[in-house]
Length: 460
Image (cartoon, rainbow, N blue to C red; front, side, top):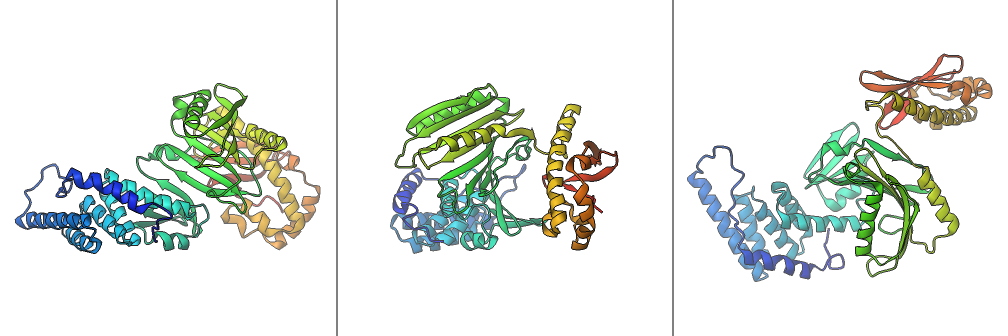
């Protein structure tokens, strides 16, 4: 990677960085984290620390003289003697960056933040690298793993689990499914508790929309959708869903809207703010901002819904202005139709009322899916049929099996096949039995990675 001046005003950045750093006399001889009862360092250790400090000080002097290669040589010696000190890696990274060796700088900056999560200067420059990658679009959903590795280089560590890969760069984790980027996680102060949603907004977009970007940090989880041919870096339309951690416990939806309005007014030239449908805990509103040096003019329609723990926001943005009345009405109706549902019913402890609600939702959805499957049987479409069943039984869905079921498909109806749903708990996990009108079980639905799949072949 080459950090060129078109991406960042490098000279100005470094001038701002070095003046306060070199004038404050930061202690370079910091010791590694102490144990409860630290032992006295050996004479050899003390000598290494002294030598590392001398090389670092000489490196700083060479930085002032703009002797980048000389500074690199000194900092490399210092890091070799004291590899566990964050600030030494940071200084080496800065020297590499000044010498136009951005790839090596990126490695050292990452080491600095891994060694010291409180190294603010290293974090600041790490995020500048990350912002550069983001602008390049390399962090978008669907980017091939090989392309990420080509630009970001070898990760600090890598994990494999259940067909997924996780590449770790400093405090940023990149999750891949089927060798394509799926999500970005900023792990600073990220609590495992909030990584799992209690509730989520159920909505439908359909073609030509696709996921463009997905991220999670310590305050929120965000997914942005764009249409075919567009990216989150360059779009005319965008749809987003956001879960704001803990804020459902602290504010009403109306209060959150007002807080958002205050932020918009600080950052943009607000032309219009209109509440479409008011409500204390469920509010629909829109706003328009004028074109500025930083952003184009845009029209945004939002819905804010308060959950038991988190706050949930859905938003549609259009930069194709003016927004046509018919398009505005369509998106208002789409946002109104979204539902706040239990996020993971397969593991949640549901009340009797919640089980009834889940059964009702599954009955409607199952009838919709069965209607599609009856058509797949008539068409002999094995590829379309298989994803609705668990991997255990997919191999049973063949051309021959669909051919034998055609007679059944001609007379069966979704209402007869899906008469009611029974929610059961088996080994701590919810399952749903689909009962036919004659009282017999059609199939059993089981949760698989966030969706329900049939665990038996229901047709003959």
